[in-house]
Structure formats: structure tokens, C-alpha cells
Length: 204
Image 1 (tube, rainbow, N blue to C red):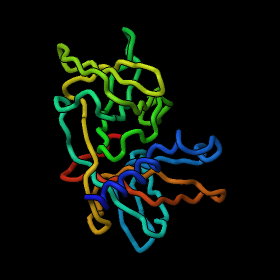
Image 2: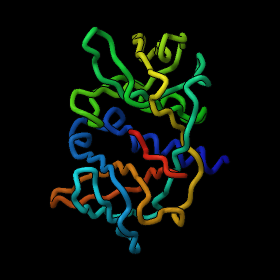
Image 3: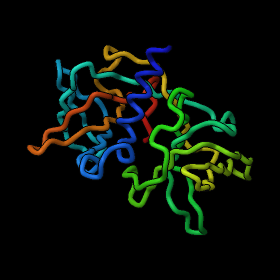
Image 4: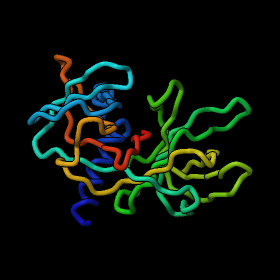
């Protein structure tokens, strides 16, 4: 488990690189979402959600981290979460997904910033200060960098957390989320692959 938490911490920095690297580096970050077509040595082929096949170079000592279901009702004050959300027509934000970080990753990429899960979406990585039951879910209040934000989370919102996985677990058809770096020649590379286990689709 110690090895996992260390790997997960590294993964978290890559996953949320947009707030932990320079603006120039962030501009070169490409988040690939889709399913595994093949893994051949140091090359991963992904069928993206847009329907194209994308090749990604796997860096030396690359890692796989699993994503498993978590429960909305288990989220409590003090937990560190990543919530992708969209503005609601009546005001405020509504969650698209919630990632509950392992304790060892608390503070990873803290902040609120644009995300590309959907147009106009935002990712907020913050500490839960309150989680109040609502009619059809919960209103979760979080704190980050001295700021506060309340996000409504419906009961059917996907909630996940990280879990141990091995490179051998990466199989064709598995849903993945791959934070990658784009080189000047357009090639993509990564040291971390986030894979859905038991049919879970990484919701990031």
C-alpha cells in the first residue's frame, strides 16, 4: 500500500498538471479519454471518445492506477476531493463527477481551474468542509487556497477513488484516462495511465 500511495501521489501530479506546472507546459498537456486498443512494448493505442485511434509513448517506469467506485454518502469533512462541474442555469455549479483522493494525495493540485471533460467545465481540487444532504443528492462545500465553493452533487453522480493496479492489468477494451505530454512533433507520451476496473469508466 505504501508503494501505491507513492505512485498515486505521482499520478495525481500528472493528472492535475495544469496547476502544478508552468503555463507553457500546461498548454502541452493532452488528456486522452477512451478505451485501450493495444499495448505493444512502449506504445499504447487508445480508441478515443472522439472515435480516433491515438498512439501514446509509454515512458520508462510507466505506471497504471486503477479507478474504483466510491460512495457519495461516505464523503465527509476533511476529505480531499476533485470535482468536475458545470454551471447550472439557476446558478451555482453541478457536479459531473467526484474523485475522492487517498489521504496520501491530500493537497494535490489544489485549486479551481478550467477542465476539458465537457465544454465550460471546471475542476476543483479542495478539502471538504461540509456535505449536506439535499433533496436529490448533497451540497458539498469545499475550501481551496482560502476560497470557498459549494457544488451540488446529485445521487446518480459518478464517485470514484484510486486503487492499486499493475501494468499487466491494462487490457484491450479497458476504459482509460491518460494525461499526456505533447512534443513539438505532435507525438504524445505519458508515465501514468488511469484505468477503470470492473467496467468503471474513469470519469475525469
